[in-house]
Length: 194
Image (cartoon, rainbow, N blue to C red; front, side, top):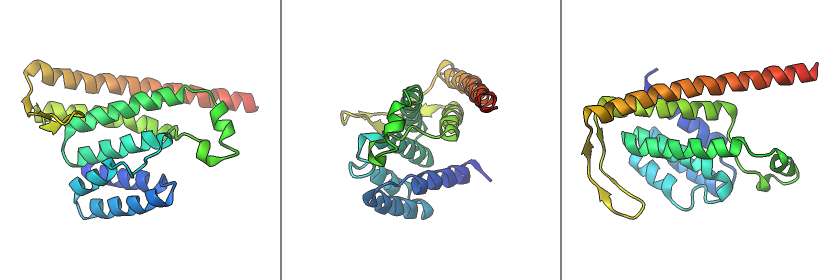
């Protein structure tokens, strides 16, 4: 399975499994249809709209969806920025106290989406992959920043390309540490049970 098909599969999996309101379900179906028809730009516009995952509790999901759609649109630099935001948010949420999680048992609307372990792991994979794509591509695509200013395409110097190659490598090392910490937590939980 090539990487693009893998991304499409994971994107569809995320979007279908995490639609928590009727509006999000309807938007998810529209985005799903656009992705299946390979109209990634239309799907991206829908995901970026204020109506899609508009509540603060779903911010991680929205970041992941936009990052993935940016990747499918071959906007690797934009994809990287969104995956980095998702990683920062997921790391912050991952370290939060479980008290909020316990409160959400009474009301699911109180719960913030913290991200599943496999999703937190995949964010690291995606960041590494996107950095490698930027290294191979050799430029940052033209884009419009959050202030509406058009940032022109930028050809990367050899040092900038190497930065992205090394960044990809460092994320893989960090990903390995993350997986080892999860493995240690599981071992600790097993010892506690017995």
